[in-house]
Each structure stands twice: as structure tokens, then as C-alpha cells.
Length: 107
Image (tube, rainbow, N blue to C red; front, top):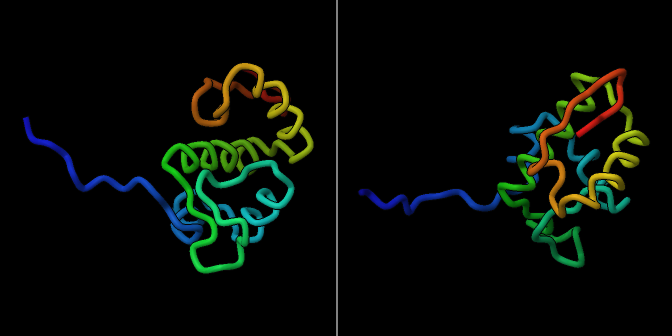
């Protein structure tokens, strides 16, 4: 069996923006508010590569992008859902199956 050695494990904010459709402003604001912080980040986020995202972060942010853009779930509802989901998983946006009904997220 061939061993895969060239695996991307970390993503910069620019890659995350392209892969999720989220804006740099949105990523910064979610990080500042404590809603979604990158897994690897410097205390001083203003330095180059101050925010580095894991693959699991990418999956979670993609989920949030779909919920907010496709299903039009607003940030207050996402925050409320995050509080509920945190009881079940430390990475709820990337590890749980979510459903949307009447612009509310269920799991």
C-alpha cells in the first residue's frame, strides 16, 4: 500500500476564504467574538499567518457558510445552536449531522 505523505493539514485565511466563500471580515469578527476561532493562532492575530486553520476548522466553516448563505440562518441563531451543540461535541460544526427546519438548526 502506498503511503500518502503530501497531506495539507493547515490552511491560511486566504485559502479558507476561497474554499468557504466567507469573507476575511467575517472570519476576523467570528474570531474576535469567540464564535469560531482558528485551531492554531497567535495571541497577536495581526501578524502574518496569525490565523491558521485546521482541516476540521475548514469543514466547520464550510458548514457555517452553507447554513448562513444557503439556509439564511442568522448569527444569533447560529450562536444559540453552538451553545446547545457544545454539550455533545467539542467540534460540533464538523462532527455532527445537522438539519435545518424553518430556519432553525437541529441535530
